[in-house]
Length: 209
Ligand code: TMP
Image (cartoon, rainbow, N blue to C red; front, side, top):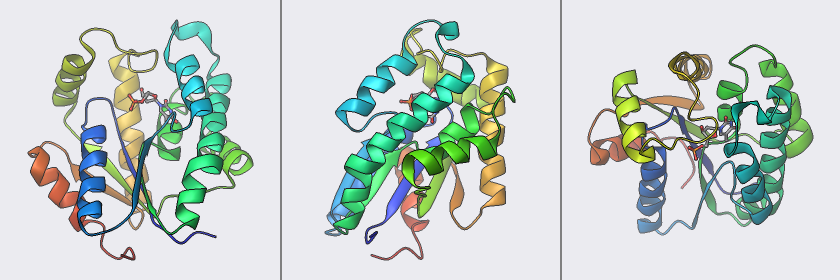
């Protein structure tokens, strides 16, 4: 039984998701809300092991379908062991990336469809969906600059894909936001960190306290 609220942050590389996930969690905790702050891929020991498998090594290490299955497997573990139990206790969960990342990234080259990715999510995680999702939107040049500063030339297996790939990922996120405006809000991430946090908190409207 789900009693808490499930919030996810999404977007391309270097858009400030991790900083903002922590800022939302802090803002909610200040109001006395119990919050679990987590991330994908990862969030439990088993899922963190899968993260390591996914993000290290050469591009050709995994076929795109294997990659999608591994993300779904990490998510299944995360949902079963951390997210669902927290929601059942009535806590809020703030998660840095979730199913929309699989939809945006793994579908880029067209070898696996959105419907197939959602099938994996149904099988692995019983179709658990966030109550609200924020897509942090940043102009490409700003995102590249921030990601380069963060990674210092050492981007991971997926972050290191070319510009066209990351442009397609961001286009997918924008399309999801247009298709599902109730759940998914597009947030201008080029504002100051504080202004972005304020805009996220404002966009928690309609969710139960
Ligand atoms: P991070 O840099 O936000 O920690 O995310 C790790 C990388 O994994 C990032 O390049 C996005 C990618 N990713 C996917 O391709 N599919 C997914 O389902 C998730 C959760 C992340």
